[in-house]
Structure formats: C-alpha cells, structure tokens
Length: 215
Image 1 (cartoon, rainbow, N blue to C red):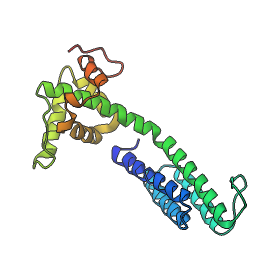
Image 2: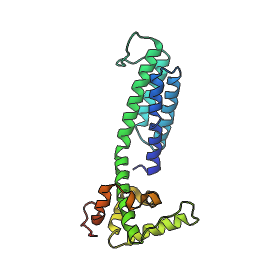
Image 3: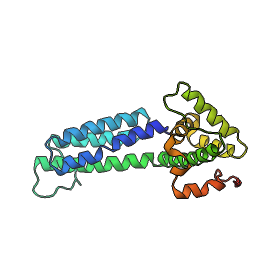
Image 4: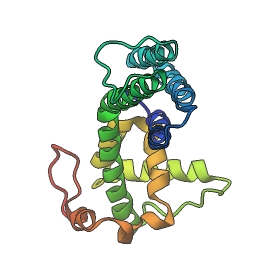
C-alpha cells in the first residue's frame, strides 16, 4: 500500500509526459535524451517504492538506448521513410505511451483508495467543524501537529463520527489520515467548498457497511 506522498511523487513525474510529447511533435533533436532522463527518474521512484513495474521502465529505457545505436525492435511503427531520427522518435513515442499506461495501472488502486479517504475526510471535517470538533489550523502554528492530533482524536472518539474516522484510518493509515485532515481543515475546505453532492450527503455520513448515522 503506497502512502500519499509516494503516489503524488509518481504522479508528479507523470506530469512531465505532456512536455515530452510537445518535444516529440516539435521534432526536438534532444527528445531521446530528455525521455531517457525522465525514464531514469521514474524508474528510481518506482524502485524506491519496491514496485515491480520498475523493470518495465528499465526495459523501455534500454529500447531507446538501442534505437540511438541503430537497433529497433520489430513492431515499432515508423511513418514515412526509415531514417535514424525517425526510428528514435518512434521508439520514444512508444516508450512514453507504454510507461505512462503501465505506471497509471500500477497506482490506480492506491489513487482510488486515497481519493475515497479524502472524500470521507472532507465530509468528516465539514460535519465535525459544525460541531466544534475541528477548527481551521494555521499551517505555521507552533503547535500545528499537536492541534491536528487533538482534532483527529476528537473525530475518532465522537460517538457519531468515530466509525467513519476509523474507516478513513483503515484506508490510508494514521499518518496519512493526519495529512488529509490537515489539507481538508484549511479555510477553503469548509462545508461551503464541498461539491453539491458532498454537501447533500452530510446528513447521512457513514462508513461503507455501517448503519446510517442521522444528522
């Protein structure tokens, strides 16, 4: 199970793909170098998290290196007359698509789990805030961590909201629960900032499989 910081680190690396595609479309002469550097960074992040997909990224990196040396694997689609540069660009294009797809598939379940935990945390903060269990905590407060811990204990110990808080903790763990609480308890995450569907559901906030808690 990946932690929030790990998932977001990988997602930040994936955000570099549009820029690499722009280089591809411009026929940038250094495209292959930038693509290999990106694959190296992506592979390192995946290895640090012990994700087997790192081996797939290493293989794609090797394919680009081979193309730079004039060797292209069968099955690579090359439009127009075959030239060394066209061959390299084709391999880079295939590698970017394959890497993005493989990594997104790898982190999909963790992203879904974190999104679900954050959705429930937003509701917890809105509901708990209206009852004085959670307040806006300035990020520069000297006792910021202590206040977060106290707010989380308030939610966990609450007769009505505790079951949901425990479910959130089960989804992402105690440390990441505090990260989500921190994010959701800032001024722009109050009840008025929630999407309409979330605001409407505040009256029946429950953990999956739990009995409905009426407002």
